[in-house]
Amino acid sequence: MAQVAHATSAVLHETRDRPDTQAYLEDLKNMRKVVMQTNDQASIERLAGLLSTMDPPVPYHLWIEQPENISTCLALAPNRRESRIKKALDKTGCRLWKG
Image 1: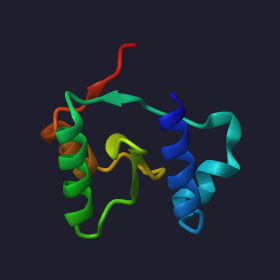
Image 2: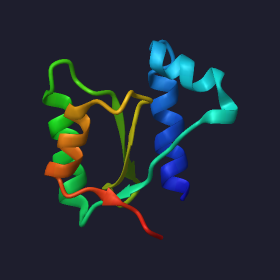
Image 3: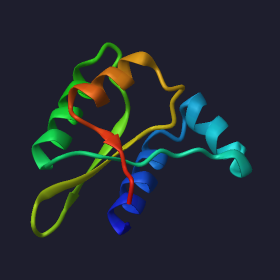
């Protein structure tokens, strides 16, 4: 959970000037988050690659745990659930986390 908190804080800071992020942060009582899981580190890194190569790129923060240097979490910037993001999540095997 700490890694998720780090990645989320980072992406909010990095995208603080985006209208979607500002709107998300202005409505604290209605924040919505979805936690998804992947099969392995490679799928998180594939997702990061897909998001980076989209036009325009989808803002995210890939958390790399140190000192292990392992990609453990990816947090998307607040968004409007665009179909291109859903397709990238599906393509990399992301599914709803069922804890």
